[in-house]
Amino acid sequence: MKKHGKSNTPAYRSWACMKERCNNSNSSNYRNYGGRGIKICERWLSSFENFYEDMGDRPLNMTLDRIDNNKDYYKENCKWSTNKQQFRNKTNSRFIEFNGEKACLAEWAEKLNINIRTLTARLNKCKYSIKEAFTKPVGLRKKNVNTLTEADKTNYLNRINKTFKSDGKYKSKYLGVSRTENNKKWLVYCKHNQKTIVIGRFNDEIEAAVARDKYCRENNVKVKTFNFDIL
Image 1 (cartoon, rainbow, N blue to C red):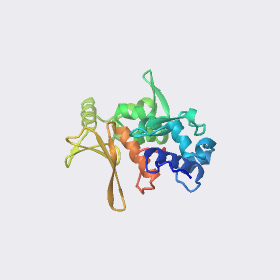
Image 2 (image 1 turned 90 degrees about the vertical axis):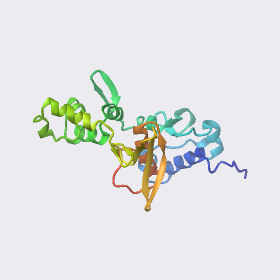
Image 3 (image 1 turned 30 degrees about the horizontal axis):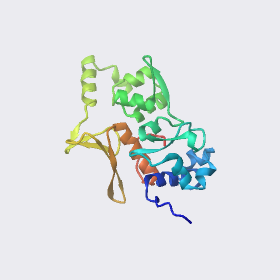
Image 4 (image 1 turned 60 degrees about the vertical axis):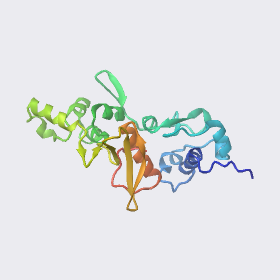
């Protein structure tokens, strides 16, 4: 049997993970792929060489993505995407129109500088209107908003929208993401088996948060909570 010599490459790992989530019912991601009928074309399933011939090397900080999330893995339906692009292409990404602009909920969270979990809770659990969910100051209970003066609201928003500094790091509103004072990139990390694992560095904060969630899910890292409720 001819060896391809690429077993330790990013492209091979993407191919192996694709097979795992589509064919292994014990995989933590199976329910979102094989569990809902997503299959791999025979050309790729039987041969990594065929997959590599069609997709080539995996670019830095990119992952395998399907153009149509309801269709299978095959050449015409796959591309390499950044974590942010893939996150926004998920089947359960929610698109909302506000002030004449339409974007997915993740993009609104980034534009408004509000944690996506907060926006999701406001819209789904608290049943806020879109306007109230998007404009209410973060961290204030609904019953207390109307008791604040306009000056109080302005000061509060100015304070919470600033990235705050603590112990030499600029902390993110997302879990497992921070930035050092002299580095413009966001550092992604998690704790596993009493060790801190550095996952990578990203220019974009939300892309970093998605990368942290993705790493923890794919490697079965036990965390108290994820930044986003989707895979």
